[in-house]
Picture 1: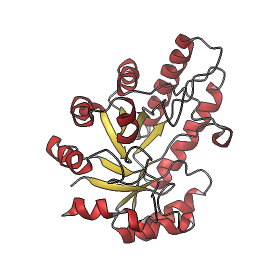
Picture 2: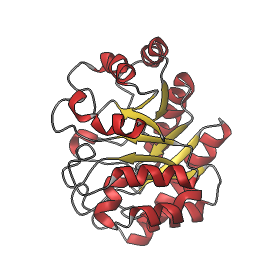
Picture 3: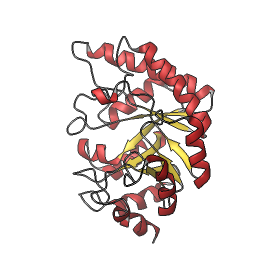
Length: 260
């Protein structure tokens, strides 16, 4: 059975964020992630993790102005200094929380900028971030996100584009964050794609499609995928990053099934 983690930004929203750590532990999770930890003090987060015996498995670099619609700034010319400050902030959080891996959101392609300049900015920023993180023993991921439904204009919208970026940076410290939900929308054929990408995969997330709800609400056959991950020998974290269609507790039938 894969090592499952819970995304506390999306799951257990029935209780305030500090209480979600206990809820995740009670549900049987040993690892947690969140989109962004920066609204809370590092010492608070570390205590909440420690109190429940949980591992922080992932969070994202600062994304720019999320509320205004920004979805990462790594590809944006003119925002390099801001991006680098965000990397430094993320390093401090990762060290405090014992988090071994962070994710970089590439961002939306800016209007009026040549595609080559956007790509070059992304490569240079990810390369710089990876060097800083590797120096501290922290892994970096880049994630492909669908541009059809959730994030039109997202620069990395296929596993092939993400792998191209990884190849250009050329570092064992940089890995692919493979999200089953996003890649089902963009390319499908999930098991064969995972087999092909697995040497570069550092983290996996999932939700069903359509709807981005829990397994069993859509078209993805999760039992087959979880079995395939075991067969492939994947030993990283597999994080539930879905929006429960009801309560979180009611959405966890998939977890009980995976344990049987």
